[in-house]
Amino acid sequence: MRTNNSTEAYHRRINSIFQCSHPTLWVFLQKLIDEQNVTHANVVHIKSGQLPKSKKKNERFEKRLLHLISNPHQDILTQLDSIANNISL
Image (cartoon, rainbow, N blue to C red; front, side, top):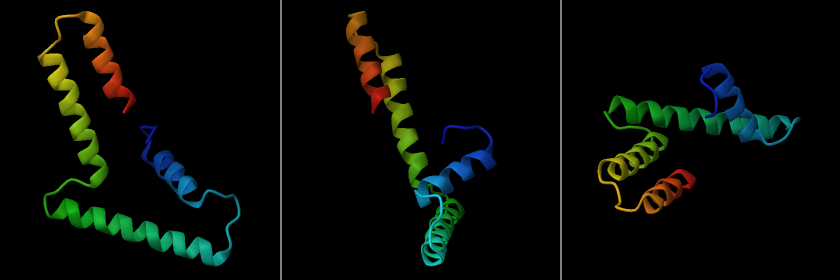
């Protein structure tokens, strides 16, 4: 999500789910049901002590960057190229 405001982030998520301005009633209801199922699955994961899937991806990304920073390459250009490659993933 590209914003710190949770309401704006949720609004952006809903807009990306529907991908149109005026969905039909049935499409609208089905997308809301699908979103509720995803939210429920995330709640179940959190209650069981696991991170939601999107958090795991960020965690792997952060570990790769920390590894690059703590074990730098000899050549600064290679180091910068490696960091840039991880950021673009």
